[in-house]
Image (tube, rainbow, N blue to C red):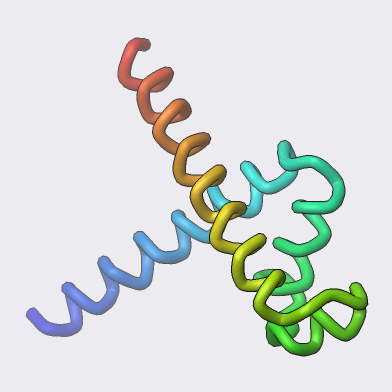
Length: 84
């Protein structure tokens, strides 16, 4: 039973990540770059800050805003697919 729950969580997480990557393609270029550096290439906030010559706190705030935008986009997608 525990294995089933773990597998279900893994599958759901995989779907969430896949959808996030697809939605990130709709972001403006500057936000898309931040998303990719963090979530596709695995850079830390401090590494991203160094690459982009900004403070690491700014990276955190920008990533939080990106996450909020992606969640809003996800809600729209869910609403659209629910209407069909």
